[in-house]
Image (cartoon, rainbow, N blue to C red; front, side, top):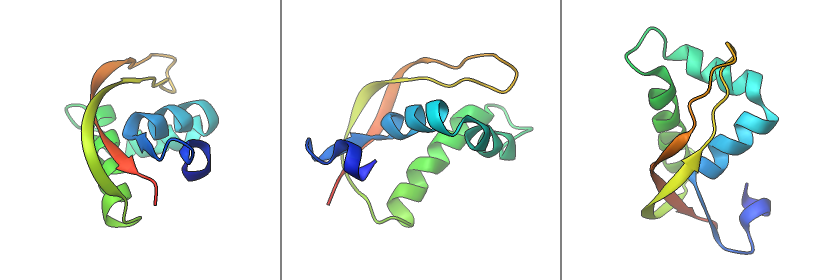
Length: 91
């Protein structure tokens, strides 16, 4: 993600979610499954990904913005849509 978005200097949480959905879907669904049975395991997983970026990778949040999200579940269902997400600075 750093290399992909280095030129613009930032990426948002959905850039990472969308990349995982398209390139590492099985692993992404494993993360989602970790939060089952919950009210909304997809939402919980995406929130935890953001917390990981801040706490363990030391990413600096610079703002929030509305962004598109694409999620393809193992079952073939989708959780696509727009919602607010954190924007992270690329050091």
